[in-house]
Length: 131
Image 1 (cartoon, one colour):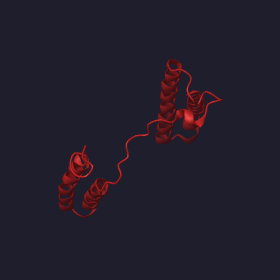
Image 2 (spheres, one colour):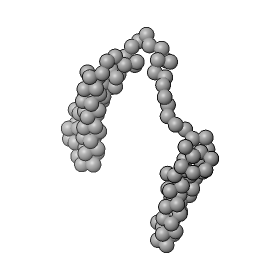
Image 3 (tube, one colour):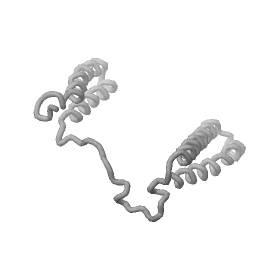
Image 4 (spheres, helix red, strand yellow):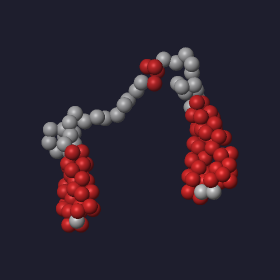
């Protein structure tokens, strides 16, 4: 957690003084607003990571003698195979094509997206992978 605190503090301290310098040299509102936004996000990240670092105990990235296997744990659930994302991607592709070609194709894509989403949500309640 400590490297994140330092990195966000350095980014905010570098980008912060750049805002007036950029404004006086370029006189561009969009770039100044973007740089201000990036500095604000770096300050938010700095504040959050600092408060989290204070509340938590020593993390693995803070311990120089830590082993790589010390952070191993549950990675999540990965299904063996699923056709549902392919159906959903096809439906989204038809919807995207409908925006360019004609709005009637958006309706067709929405008609394909509803069963694809239902199939994706309920695929582990019926069939081979039911539990």
